[in-house]
Amino acid sequence: MYKKYYGKPKMRLNDFRLSVIDKPLPEKPANTLQIPRRTNPIHTITRITEKDPNGRMKRKHCRQWYRQKKRSDTTWHCVACNDKPGVCVECFYLFHAQL
Ligand SMILES: [Zn+2]
Ligand SMILES: [Zn+2]
Image (tube, rainbow, N blue to C red; front, side, top):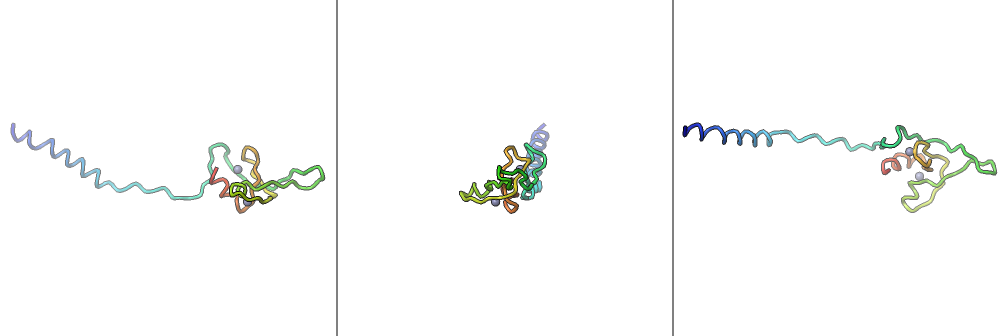
């Protein structure tokens, strides 16, 4: 009776603790630039094809520059975004990474 009481419960507790400590740390997910796919399946940068009343191609302000309190015109936009924001080629990934 004495032996039974002494042996089992303590061993189990120790085993449990050891198994927790020995577990390898979970691998961190790779920190890659991914375009969020919550609202639209595919974001694609496209030339603006709309024309203004004078028959010239419309330009839009690049949204990414706008975020940085700068202004720059672009002839590119993303048609998959809700309001077809203007965004230049070099800003395309950055812009979508921060959506
Ligand atoms: Zn987009
Ligand atoms: Zn830009």
